[in-house]
Amino acid sequence: MKFTRRAFVLTSGAVVGLPAWARFAWAAPPPREADIAVVGAGAAGIAAARRVLAAGRSVVVVEATGQIGGRCLTDAATFGVPFDRGARWLYNPDSNPVARLARPLGFEITPAPRGQRLRIGRRNARAGEMEDFLAALVRVNRAIGDAARGKADSPCLDALPKDLGEWRATAEFVLGPLGTGKDLKDISVMDFARAAERSGDSFCRQGLGALLTKLAAGVPVATATPATRIVWSNRGAEIETPAGRIAARAVIVTASTNVLAAGRIKFSPELPRRVLDAAARLGLGSSDRIALELPGNPLGLARDDVVIEQSNGARTGALLANVGGSSLCTVEVAGGFGRELSAQGEAAMVAFATEWLGRMYGSDIAASVRRTAVTQWNAMPYVLGARSVAAPGGQPSRKILGEPLGALSFAGEATHETLWGTVGGAWESGERAAEAALRRIGALKPEPAAATTRRKKKRNN
Ligand SMILES: Cc1cc2nc3c(=O)[nH]c(=O)nc-3n(C[C@H](O)[C@H](O)[C@H](O)COP(=O)(O)OP(=O)(O)OC[C@H]3O[C@@H](n4cnc5c(N)ncnc54)[C@H](O)[C@@H]3O)c2cc1C
Image (cartoon, rainbow, N blue to C red; front, top):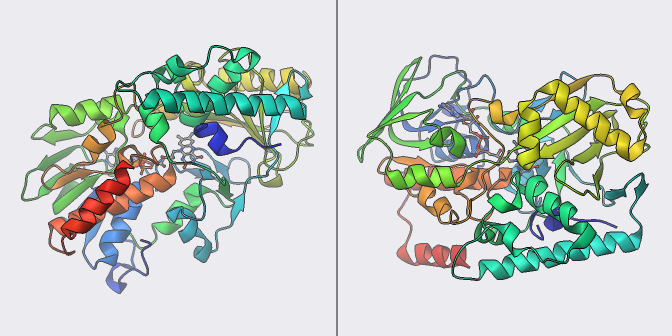
């Protein structure tokens, strides 16, 4: 029996080769000018830069941290096997642009195992119990969908059927914290209902961060170069960094909504109030991983098994066991509980994970734990959270954030109206912003009016 990611979440340019002149990686300091400059080398930033290069225009990407990939970050050192600290699943692999680009580069995209487990106390759920749970998820999704058709937006929690009984807390965890990083009380029914289906979960054997680094080969990225201030107008923009200024005819900013809302990048003139409000309403939820090395498979699970429990409150998690056939197991904690736990630090996080696993599989699990590692995305200064989710009333903010302001525009997962919170959505948003910027500087033909109207109609459906 399987509960799909769809059940979790919804119920829960391709750029062909790069021009020869662009196939080099240069060292800092970055050049002083480019046709288009991009802030951030996550999925959106890399996609945008590749699109600009494919159009034969110059681009420079400034990245604040020392790595490429942003919220796609693979740690290959700690456990000797790829540990994706951020995004792991590639949804809808047949249409996902990142999955499509991975295969020709020799990256292995593997479907998640079909049988996912639900634990009730110390045992696996029986088929009938699993069916009851899936039925509860379907009812919740339907109820949220109905609520979203109303005139006014409201919190997802308010839409929950009252008679979910023993499945209520589990459904809340799966659809809220696990699916999005926020509790259902903090999520807009309209944003939730507009999310595109996320199914066919697959993952990249070598790690999503490793894949994004590969996809950035040939893209001129200046790492450890934060944009501190952006001066923008209708005519062009200038990015200030500790390594100097970069002038461009258009600038695409892909920093997360929490980075924007926290004012980590100064803008001159200041951003309009509606844009700052949009970033604030699309605040990031909290998702973190607690990685435990458990040699000898003490949980008795198969490779890449996913396990959740029938919970009676928010203090719960989701297990991914024996990652890629190794002894690495990760426990995902999210939402309000995950946020509080990760703020307490590594010791508290590891203690929770071992206690939680012990409760489900026997208390001797603690004795089996070898190396550990945790993520704390809320404390990462250039991300400050996991993925954007609209607060009630905040769904229109995605469109507002995606509208260009003269030579300045924003891209990133939060600007995608249906694939928000995903790597594929971030990628598409970067390509879209790059095409708009290329059109603005005359490097692409303007879109015919009919095509624009058709696309708008499609987006609104
Ligand atoms: C724990 C976790 C699990 C997730 N799981 C999944 C999943 O399974 N599947 C999925 O599809 N998605 C998942 N996501 C979401 C996914 O990672 C994001 O939607 C996507 O990676 C966002 O890409 P982005 O380019 O929009 O933003 P980012 O990846 O945040 O990239 C923005 C970049 O801008 C840089 N930056 C910020 N400020 C500055 C500055 N001032 N100057 C220069 N650079 C700056 C940042 O360092 C960063 O590299 C997960 C996220 C997290 C955190």
